[in-house]
Length: 321
Image (cartoon, one colour):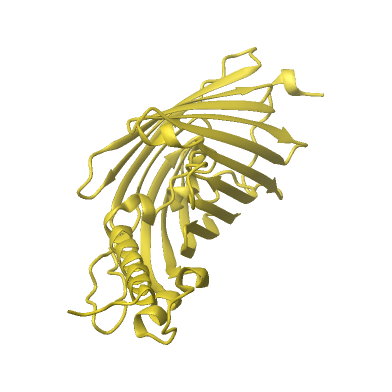
């Protein structure tokens, strides 16, 4: 019979926790790629070909608090910058996730080449290079007797991976349609420790988005229905149906989203001066999980500045001074 101390059991539980997290991160894509409720405000979150679409320099900041009310619920922060340079769009994004003691830090660089198709339509083709790193916080291994253990050390050092996202985006002033493939390479996650084999990899996704903006003449509002379809390999299709409503030249806007995973999202926002926007979203699920949470919250701030490199549309008479 072998006697195992409490500290040894605690150490084993921590290591198994980390290995389990890594395994599920490789198999459950929802933890690999953060899902943003406000994707309809920044299509570059899901498709690098949308970088530079607005023809303004754009700074986008986002905070998401998921499943609030549950201990150690996921939290995400993101900052991105987009810039148009004639036929080229460049985008840089840095983000950070935390779920309990498991952290993910990442960054990506997007390059889009844009073609003008006639007077009204544009086609953009893009690729982004992505880097992300998973690691445990120091507080996750407190109480472990042997801090020099190889598995403990590797867990705190974490694992890194590189991958790529491909995208194509067709758009005009009123409509858009795009297709993107995150994790196109499906990089295998680095081995943790010398005695463990690699058990997981980043999972490829296929994302299609389309929408159309209706602006009735002599009206102070606009309506923009849109649809997002997401297919994760070895998982069923997911769909998000969104209805966005803008008022007074979108000085005030709202959006209502229904997801086939039984999630309902309400978004409200407004302009700050002429260059900024603030938006807040609340997610509520019709499923069992949200019986134990206070929903998910997301807030974004968008700042657009600089002269557009394409001629701006002439505003309608009702908005002229």
